[in-house]
Length: 91
Image (cartoon, rainbow, N blue to C red; front, side):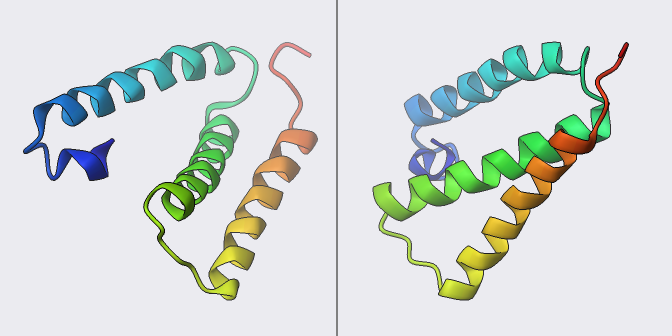
């Protein structure tokens, strides 16, 4: 939505972007009860990178080089590894 907002020149897409960020926090905040903040943020950021990359690839036809895909894959592996090796709060 931020890309479509053209630097917030197109108000509808700008409002949608802000609403989407707020919606993300609705789901992120409860996760912080169970997962340490640093790990939760790393997982959230990694997932966001992967999702935005895929969306950009298919919706905006943005190409990446194979090496770039490999590094995004490593980010995803890191987020999964953090999730699997982090004890939940209160456990």
